[in-house]
Each structure stands twice: as structure tokens, then as C-alpha cells.
Amino acid sequence: MARFTSFVIFILLMMQSTFTQADENRSMLLTYDILSQGKDIGDLTTRISQQGNRHVIIEWSHIKASGWLWKIDIVTILSEEFENGNKLTNSDGKTFEEGSAHWTKIGSQEKDILMQYLEIPKPGPREEKQIARLSLEAEANTSSNTEDILSLSGSIFMNIVEGVQEFSVSRKSFDTTWNNLPFYIQRKSDSSMPLELKILDTENLEIGKFTVKDVGRETLMLAKEPITVRHLTFSNRKTGTSHIWINTDSGVLPHVVRHTGKDEDGAFEIVLKSTL
Image 1 (tube, rainbow, N blue to C red):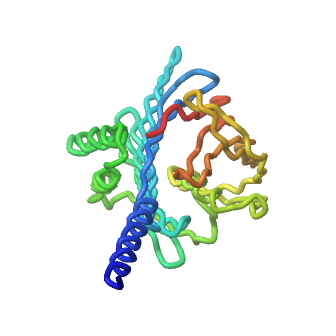
Image 2: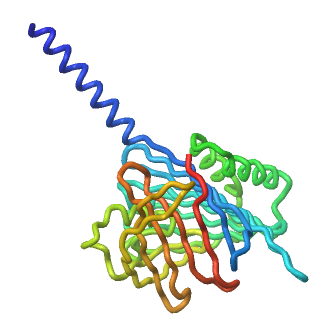
Image 3: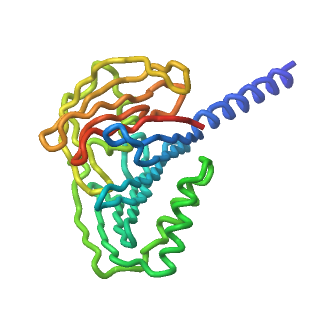
């Protein structure tokens, strides 16, 4: 009887360990439409991977628009890595536009983070091939290639030293990043939501201070299905007021469902169209 009881306990512990591991190792792929003044100008893909206390957010976007005497064709791949929910450990951003590129990188230090920036007027043939491959990987309709994207992105421009600009900032100078905002919000209850947030834009290496208003929970439709989301507004003098609807349900990895606001080109909207 004692052996049987021990065996049952062992099986239960194994099942608990399996369920815990499944809960801790999760991934999600989200695709969005980007609209400017109501016109569809691009696509955005976000993949979120969580393994234990580490999670990775990778964002790929392609904006393409044209007018009478102008055109825009910009591809951006941005990755951010975090530990313990909100501690930024690494960030790597690549933006490609009309044959030129710029690269941003953030590395973790003890009390500070090191920011680096490099502009490349004309990438070489090798870099162009790497860029094309990176864009295909980041756009791909799978969430299982996170580590491949991180490795490939980290190898582009890695040997270039000349022209790199760098500076350090204190971790206390910002609360979270824009991409990590859903994780930050998920950890905050209605009563503990701050009235102000300092948010780091890892693509442009800028920190903005925003007045935050928690509008409350609302219902939005996604693929004809209702979902409950948390609606917040973020305001400052430079950017005005933007609205962000975030899914903070405990059953999914937290993510943005809709984002509206204004920029130099007018009203914009980023809206979720599918999840995997």
C-alpha cells in the first residue's frame, strides 16, 4: 500500500510539474493592420515568447505608402528581452528605408542600460542578404522561430565599430517600454495604476513622460468574437493623447488589441486582426 501511495504521489507531482512548465512556456503570434487617416498603409506582426521568468517580444512592421511627389517604404524589426516581468535586458532594432539603415541596441548593465545607435547610409551586399532573410523570418506566420530571429538580427552590423554613438541611462529613468506595456499593465490592479509613466521607445532611444488615465474595461470584437479589454489613455504635450486597448486576461500573454492616436501625418490606428 505504501508503495502504491508513493507511486500515486510521484505521478501527481509529475503532472503538476508538466502543467506548470506548460503554463510558463507560452508563445503567441499577432498580426495587425496599420492605418493612417483611415487608409491601410502597412502591416505589423508581433511574436511574444515566454519561458519561465524570461519573455521576448519581437515586432516586424512594413509601412508602404505614396503620394503625388513622395513615397514611403520602411521595414522595421525590433526585439526586446525581459526578465522577471519588467526588467529590460536587451533590445535590438533594425530599420531599413530606401537602401539605407539604422540600428539601435540596448544592453544591460548593473544599474544602468547602455544605448547604442548607428546609421548605415548604404549596407553592403552581405548585409542586404542578411536583412532580406531577417525580414522573412520576422514576418513568417510562426511563433517558434524567436531564437533564430534574435540570433540573425544580432549578427547584422555586429562588426561595425566606427560611427557608433553610445550613452548610458539609469534604469530608474523609465518604468517600461512601449512593447512591454501590456506586461506592465497586467501586473497592475485598478487601484495601483500610476498617474504618470515614463516609457522608453527602444526604436528611437527616447524616454517620454505620459499622464495615464485608466478608462476601465470594455468589450471589443475580434474575428466576430467579443473580448474584454482594458482601455487606457496616454497623454503628453509632444504627442497629444493616444488610446490603447490591452488584453490582460490571465489566460493569454498580455497584448495590445487596438491603438489610436495622432502623429505628424494625422490620425493613425493599429488594430489586431488575428492571433495564433
